[in-house]
Image 1 (cartoon, rainbow, N blue to C red):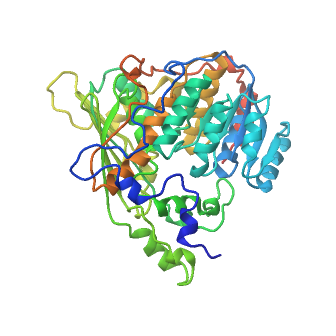
Image 2: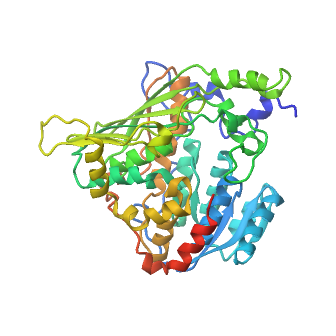
Length: 501
């Protein structure tokens, strides 16, 4: 296989370094390059804060992109009462065969198949579809998700849902005009420790939020350079057609910010009482990817010759309207354990999560808070921390968390995420994350690159709510009523037996 650098850059949503650099100049403060809207493209429909649709008791779901992530989601969701997988779309017929084979083997009806680069259009335009679930590569999230929204379908898009500011605005204005839900599938907002931190903040145990630290630290060199996709759960799998490597080769900045940023924004009520205002980003030189390629592949292999733009470590600092600060890290190349950091500091205490299991990350959950203002706070002992974990366990995790762990999907958080939005649709409730969250969190992708290429200059974060953040209601302590979803022992046993992915 011979692939030039030009081939890698072809088809990117926005790649010009000069154009990005023109968006801000070091020392000149926040500036946007021509054509990049600060306040949207113009007209808007109804504001989407607190949006509800009529209850959908039987949700007909179409899946766009059924590689590893999409297949996992399809299997998981097919087992939730009140859901029907009605259509599948992918570039490859082989993925149709895998998914429909699983459906029929497990007693579900075959789904309609749409194969090809433009096949998602026919799927989104077809009748009998309530929800389009967009997985696939990053580069497809914007075009497929936007087409689904504009086709009037409730749309759920994998992370990052948008890689450009134009895409962020298009999602916002498309959802407003079509009057449909549009949510990014940020599963980390449903992690056990993230839910614990949210509950502690809502109950005032940490006081008012002051600062947060988060990130995505995950050595992905092997998967980025691997030459096969593999099935869900395959530890040797890579990214089909090297899509993640292609994007990282062409871009700087933090192109995958939302796993850490989403939960912190929820703790701080971003878009619901506060908003992101200014971002500054810097990064190290890129070395790890190229060193890895030279060590692993022959000298004449295209991967050895590929120059990667993205720095090994990116650090972005974001300030909010209320004077709070969020530090976001991104590192997918250096050796070390996985982590999302998940540190939230308040006026009366703090929490720093293990991000997943302590065994994998190498550090335990740490928490401490004071009963009164001015009292010195130390981290609690392991015993006291466990007491806090049990006493302040989020009601949603208490209801469905243990079952979710058995079902699987990143320790159960995937299942909790899907179960919650399905419950909301079936009962006509607002979603936990709306299109403004999608836009604000994803805007870091382009904004961080602008800042880096401009010499780490400050850039302005658009107000995607157009002032709506001042009056929007914060996310409450939410859960589900499994009895309303007709969950029973039979459903749970079946799901536990089948969803080991």
